[in-house]
Image 1 (cartoon, helix red, strand yellow):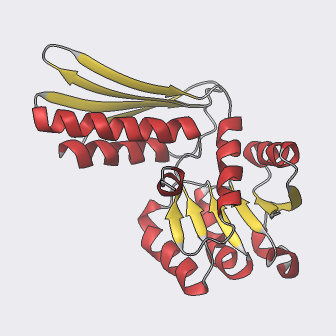
Image 2 (spheres, one colour; image 1 turned 90 degrees about the vertical axis):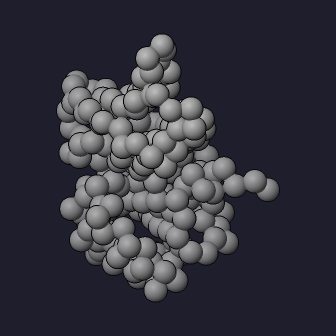
Length: 225
């Protein structure tokens, strides 16, 4: 059975801890400063990181050096993605990353890709994305919205407009729209709470057992046996 250390002990960190407890998985610690976490304990643990873009940028070398494997839920570092992946690969540390660990969002992404490919062939549709989140979210557009935009662009060779809304305590709503002259296709995912993200991250942590290399969560989630 894996043991997990949580990097970032805010709302998401507490939810991850709750999910670990419900699944009978040991939480070996939680830290706001993961770079100073006990290295002997770290070597035996998977780290689940839900921090901030700045914290992850500062901490990823230590995560790659010190932990058995790492699950990254933090977004806002796509501009250094190659550098981060290279660091984990050179240290031989498995990493799973995702802009959103919600299982529903990953299914939405697959559905968006299918629709985009068909409409890309048909022509005549204009895509756009609206994402809504709580006022505490630091990055805009969300990492999920950016990922969905890439899926749409891959399928249609059109870059969709992305609009961001920050209001109240909205856990996350992502709406992808394909507007045509005669009709409109709308695909939407609404998170009722942040617990779904924590559940998916713990699923990813379990996936690190025996895993090698760096992988995006959706690649593993949809991998056929």
